[in-house]
Length: 139
Image (cartoon, rainbow, N blue to C red; front, top):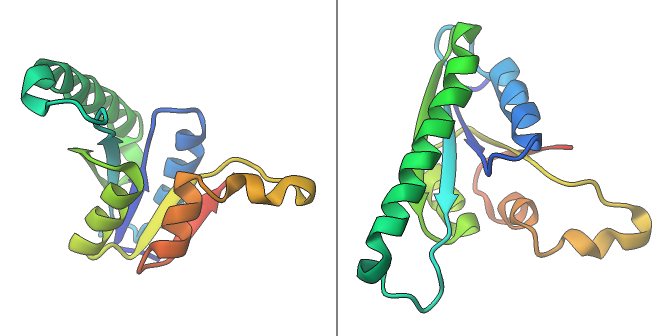
């Protein structure tokens, strides 16, 4: 069992499977699952010029994370929502390293042997290869 699990979310349907898997793997009564949403900044944009845009995105993300956590409140585990702004893969990796996560659980799309290289540029591939802790990909 794991005490400190990170579940990066982008609010797609696959996130529910990843969160449910993380809750099953968390140490009962002691485990903590962090739902992390990383907001990708707009390239070459002045942050201060569109600050209100990011504030709106953060509020929407916070509200959605709270709904996800509330829907699973009966699991007997602490579910912590967190939103950061930055490169998605780097943000996930940095958060996991700084918080000394035991496990990262994230959803990944299915690949076929005929087209296996199609997933090499995905967030799940980058996190799976570069993370300093175990990573579980849920399909």
